[in-house]
Structures are given as structure tokens and as C-alpha cells.
Length: 321
Ligand code: G3I
Image 1 (cartoon, rainbow, N blue to C red):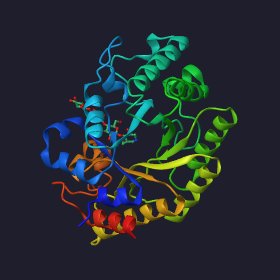
Image 2 (image 1 turned 90 degrees about the horizontal axis):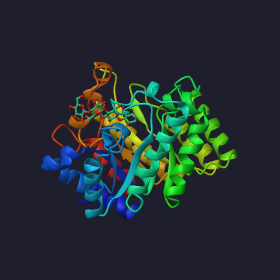
Image 3 (image 1 turned 30 degrees about the vertical axis):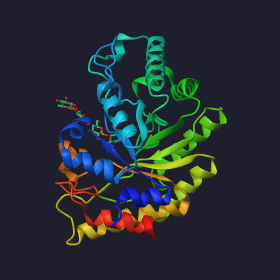
């Protein structure tokens, strides 16, 4: 039987996975799955500002390098996630210690350093992550407070200056189908494009938790972003039921949703889909109590012991079809 990776390669499709450097180093079955089943890697945490910046003056690229080197050794692409986020900033980083100008310089230096280091090895970046709040207003983050909406303009410009070849993405959750939030993301990206900001694409995370978005609406949403001239990727997919409410045929229903989303990708010309973890044991949903209390902790293509689930066969079928 063909692996997912072989099937994706034959189709010219990037099927990716979020990875953890410790599991890559220490867990043999995890490492084998990553290598054999996927052709694109996203560091789940290692390229975020917190993990990269142990102190104001230093960078620790060890974990990020380990993932990038693994990808190169196994002929895989890397999606860089993420340069600008309000979450997972370093613990020593206290915004009130900085003036607005200092924050702007800090962010510029961070982007220049990180994008510069991976110029030849990371060709896609989630430059800005989750800048829009759930009600569609701009999220009031440290970066927004210091620079207003133009923090996005600058972030994309700085990344583009350092690596003009890289594809630069805006990435968000809950904006997968047509809804209030995706309307707001659409308007934001249209404003950026009108201002000449070098943005290439939009990442739809697709954390399908509890209520799953409607696939026709996802397709329509993808098409409107494409009509703006943007590429679209599915960047963090996982699929869970409300806790305690999983139906008898939960795994089949999950598989069908994964299949439908792959078909939406093929129909709309989306060439990249990333799942947010390898096996269910690695899912972030299990780590965060407020999520594990609300959703089933089995959202991925492989089970607790990294054995393929029905969803795995379903995505292969869809890619092979
Ligand atoms: O690595 C440290 C470890 O040294 C420490 O001992 C331990 C104790 O708390 O924490 C470990 O770091 C945790 C890290 O995951 C690795 O497990 C962080 O506390 C924890 O906050 C972090 O969670 C990550 C989360 O982003 C942070 O908000 C999840 O792994 C990661 O899956 C999740 O990913 C996000 C995307 O970046 C953006 N979209 C939503 C998605 C899911 O929340």
C-alpha cells in the first residue's frame, strides 16, 4: 500500500504535520511516521518567539534547527510558524518595559534575525498569527497597542526585505468558512493588499472542534480569498467532537470530514494541508484542560500509539481519487 506521503507526492500535494522536536529525537514510531507519511513540517512551537528567545539578548535556535535539519535530511518543506503573535511571547518580555518605538524595533529585529537565519530552508512563513478577534474587531495585542494596524504592514515588509523569495502568510482560526470572522479577515487582507503590503496567502487553521464548518462554505471562502490574488493553505487541521457526545461512528464521521476537506482542497486548487500533530497522544487539545474538558482528545490521523485511523485511509483515498 502507498503511504500518505507517496500518495501526496504523486498528486503534487503538500501534506504536512506540526512537529515537536523532543518527540522527533526520542520517539522512534513518531519519527518514522513523520518521515514516511508527510512531506511538509510545521514546528508546532519551536519557531515562536517564546521558545526562540530565552533572554532579551540571546536566541536559542536548537529546537528549530533540529526540525529544519530533519526536514532537509528527509527532503521535506518547512512552514515557518509564526513571527508575530500575542501568545507565547517570552516570560521575561513585559511590554510595559518598552516604549512603542522600542517595541517596533524589537519586533523588527526579531523578524530580521529569524527570517534571515532560515532564508534558504524555510520558504513559507506565517508572518502574523491571529490578529483578528472572534467578533471581527482587531485583536488588541501588544503589537496593535504599540503600532496600530500597521504592525501587520511592517511585519510583512520586514520579512519580505530579508527573504524576497519566501511566501508570506496571514494565519487565523475560526475563519475557515464564511462567517463574521472570515469577513473581517477578508476585509483586513484587502486593506493590506490595497496598501501594497507583500502578502502572498492566507492560512486557514481549521481546528474543527465540536461544530465543524460546512465544506461548501469553506470552498466559497477559499475562492473569495483566491479572487483577491491570495494563495490559501489549510494550516492546523484537527477534528474533534464535543466531549461526551461522540457518536458510535465517530471515527467514520471524522474520516468523512477529513476526506471532504481534502476534496475541497483539490477542487479549489489548495495544494497544502497541515494536521496539528501526528498521533492523538500529541494533540494540544489534551494538554489544555479547558479544551480537553470540552472536546474529545482524538482529533488526528493517527491514534495514541501512532497507528493509522480511518481518517488516514480517507485522506489517502481522496488524494488518490
Ligand atoms: O516546552 C515547555 C516545557 O519546557 C515546560 O516544562 C512545559 C510546562 O508548561 O511547557 C512546555 O511548553 C508548552 C508547549 O506547548 C509545549 O508543550 C507551553 O506551556 C504551551 O503553552 C504550549 O502550547 C502550545 C500552544 O499553541 C500555545 O498557545 C501548543 O503546543 C500548540 O499546539 C498551540 O498551537 C496553536 C498555534 O500555534 C496557533 N493556532 C492555535 C494552536 C492551538 O492552540
